[in-house]
Each structure stands twice: as structure tokens, then as C-alpha cells.
Image (cartoon, rainbow, N blue to C red; front, top):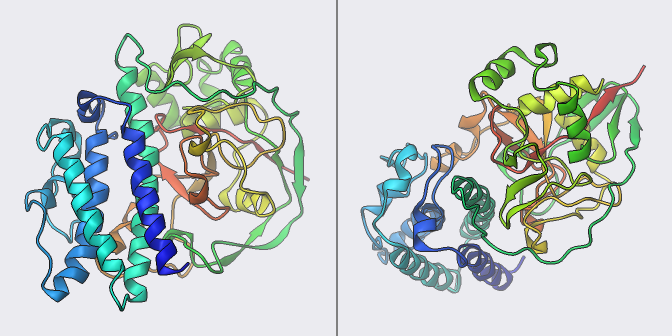
Length: 411
């Protein structure tokens, strides 16, 4: 990608973030509904902090041309970079009522102007260009978090407020579930080639897989209803021990956001019918595993998922499509709609080495007590995903657009 194209991409990605925040009030922007979710305003500021800290401070600062927009922001909007310094407590981000949204927007525009100017300098290093691209990929992750975190916050309001009215889309029937069979043998997984990838997608390496089958689509709401009707949330033999303990503590009876008996659910468009043919969504790893056990199957291992997705086009329902919720796919589909839980813990690939410096904290230090998800969701930018992309969350997480694809052993 040329520097001119990268500068245009910078402007486009930053504008897309502001567009996601445009329909909501300043009060909406400040709300924090749980420690794992952050206010929209914080996302707007933190993504800007990333460019200011890792690009302007480093590259403009080396030329004597850097002054922080506000020195207090270094602490307020640092997420988890211990080598950068102190961070404001994550669980209290909703208490940051000041700066207000207008000042955060000024922060964004000021940093944007300086970054674009820096990229237009006569000599721009490959390192600078690579860091800008990393910052944009990081921002796209937060674009998805803006929607997922905002949805959780709005769901706490008993009036079920509407964020946006979704674009019109054709209601389809789910494609028949088919099983794709893959033979045993050595396969290669992980990112390789030109283009961007996160460090946790590398290095490409070999994995031996036993023969397996994988479903051609995700589990639907209608199929999940059958699980519920058969006592799926009341049968301990289906559940992992930790999952059963969480279920008992949290009193789970159905997917997150389903209302009443599940005829409707809270969505970013307010209360909407739960469509049987759409992929089930907002279920935890524990629920996904219990369903797979009930169905006589299992969750795919991440290498199985990647091998099955390598020849699939990156097509599906993404954030650009405007549905803002999973919709039924009338064909086999591996990408979009819902992130898919795998049976693989989030650990380093063989020969993985975290990058040096503060950016080494981006992925590597989270490789414990998390599970890998694949495929992207209706809140993910289309250009952000690929077959090798590894998302990860704790086993009990439900507020992400997470769903289930089944796999089976063969022979």
C-alpha cells in the first residue's frame, strides 16, 4: 500500500469510528454497564491516545515537534500498557465525566491533523507506516467494541432504546446444515504472505489433524430453542464444571438479550423478534460447549476452523452492511454474523516471540484463561478479518456477538 493510500485509509477509518458514535447522546457516550465494557467516549479517546503515544510522541517528538494535547490523558486513556505508565482503573472508566465528548473530538482532530502531516513528510520510514497500520487495525477492533459495549449499556435501560434503525435486508431461510469432511494429515496454519497480520497470528506452522467434519453454517436460534426445550440449561451432565458453576451463579436460562421466553430480544434496533433462521448469538464458551455436547458433536479446534475457512471467500454480514445483528445466511458461510467459539485455548504459536517494547503488551500477555474465536461478526469491519485472525475472550463472556459452529470426529 502506498503512503498516499495509507493516509486516505487513516482518514476513512477514523471517520468510520466517529460515524458509529454519531447517533448517540453524550450521556450514552459516558455510560459503563460493567467492568469488561468501556464507554464509547473512552474508546474514542483511547484509540487517539494510541496514535499520540506510539506515533506522535515517538516520531514527531524525535524532531522536537511534539506536545501532548493534555498530559492527564496519558493516564486516563491508557488501557493496559504497563511500560507506558499508570492507568486509570478499567472498572471506573464510566466515572470519567470530564473531558466531555466535544473535547475528546477536539483531541481526535488535533492528533489526526498531526499524524496526516507526519505521513506527508518527505521521508517516511517503513516503521512509521507499519505503526500507522497497526493503529488502524487497533481502531477497527475498537469500532466493534463500541457497538458491543454500547449494546450492553443500552440493554440496561428498561425502555430498550434504539441506537439505529437497521438497513432493510431480505429475511432468508438458513441454509441446510451440511458437514464438510477433512482428512487426517499435516496442515499449515497461521498468517503468511503480504499484508497486515497481528503478532498472535504468526508464525505459520504445521499442525497434525485427525480426520474431522465441520458444519457448513452456525447453529441457529431455532436449533438453540430445541436445546432449551430439552432442558439444556438444567442438565449438569452437559456442562463443564466451571460452566455449570457460572450458570448457577448467574442464573442463565437463555442467550444474553433474549427477553421473556425468547420470542424477542434486545438489539441495537431496540426490541426485535428472535428469528429462528438467524445464527444464535451472545452465548458464552460454556454454553457453546454444552450445546455441542447435547448435539452429539463438539466445538472445532482453531486449526480445524482455519483449514476449513482457507478456501472460503470473506463474505457475510459485516458492520458495513448495517444490519447490526446476525441474519440468516442462505448458503454456507464462514465469515461475518457471529464470532465462533473454538475448543482451543488462546496460547502462543510455536516459535512465537512478542514484539519488543510497549507494543509487546498488545497480545502476548493475554495468553492465559481465554478461548479463541474465529470468523468475525456483524459488528466487525469486513477488511479487518481473514482466515488466520484470532479473537479471544474468557469462557464466560457473552456480550460479544459470539455464536457456535459444530465439528465432529470421524472414524
